Image 1 (cartoon, rainbow, N blue to C red):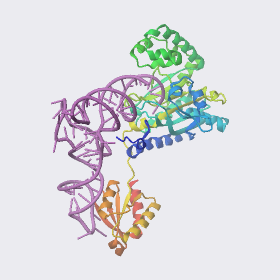
Image 2 (image 1 turned 90 degrees about the vertical axis):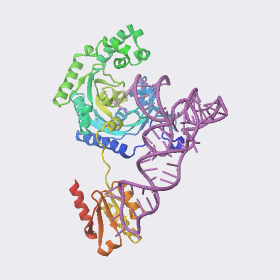
Image 3 (image 1 turned 90 degrees about the horizontal axis):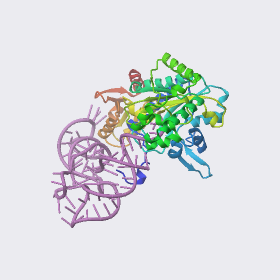
Image 4 (image 1 turned 180 degrees about the vertical axis):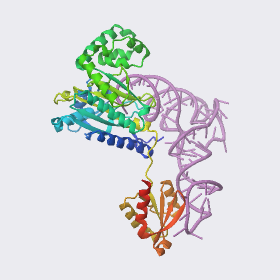
Length: 421
RNA sequence: GCGGGCGUAGCUCAGCUGGUCAGAGCGCCAGGUUGUGGCCCUGGAGGUCGUGGGUUCGAGACCCACCGCUCGCCCCA
């Protein structure tokens, strides 16, 4: 539509407004509420970090680092990157602030992330995530708690039923490495049966081939060795404990031995709450355990587990749209009443009401505006009212009116509001 | 980065094989109602038909390129 570049948002960005904003806010606020209830404390880290923070944590060969980051050199010559995710930033902050003095520490965040990708439904270049990180807890119960908190959030949003929890384990670093070796051996022997993309992944990120959508790949993968068979007894036991805790917490899941994570820092538990309602973007809340991450970033060797949820995706899934608050409209009648209306509006606002007062126009025009704003009440102030010492209170849904003594107006409105809540 | 679909008023869209094809509904503004909305009636504003080239006597319609949106792949929340 708009061809003028100055009137066009950057590709993959969005103005949040109206219903879309209300959905978004509802997801974010519910996220805050639930995370706080689980005992997680909010942290807000900068939206940009030294590029090194992401390059190190995500792995030099990951797609995010190699082709999706917004990286630039600032005026001081430093390489800066707009955060593509927030786990690395939170871990960095934990180190910076010395929060590892008191473990485990439970944190949550909400904010914009940036990834240079082809935009699609539920996938933007600037998008928002809400996430939690439980750092410094090696116990499987931490994994279960984190997942249960995610399920609770989805339930509170009314979308849990629309999702499936897929669960897997990647094992500890040794198990994972041993499996990776076996998998590469198996796949390499059949490399000519693999898609071009998977042949590339063979060296870069072989685990990723497991969840390839290519049919040829799937056929090869179907016979591939399973990670489960390479788990050390300790890793196997860890996974069992996670599942046991989840079952006790009433969280149901589907085991998916081919579920892997794109980011290098994951170990043990990997999970995704997925939906079929958002096209190709199935994952709505996903995460896992990242025991090596904090150390990779130069901190102490402490474990972590957490997840991130896509706010836009959840907003899209929301069954019911949060409604906008309904204002009270003040309608002055006659030039004499204008100033009176300003003062009345101020008083009502001070008393906590949402008040709209048009700057000009005949009563009919202002009422029309009130209607458009979905106002619940209109208050007329004019000559007749002044003579009587009242205002006219009109219920815009019913169309009924009554005279209310000016002195009683605030208490009347307060009572009406209390009745509604 | 690769492939498919699409791009006409603020919104949703109609425009048949190129020749009043620049339209409709909704929305918006004004009036009908000089102190009262939602319904109705009347009138009005608003479009370089995404942009730039090309074919043609003639293009919104055909061709090419670019831009954007969208769906899928990749990747991921």
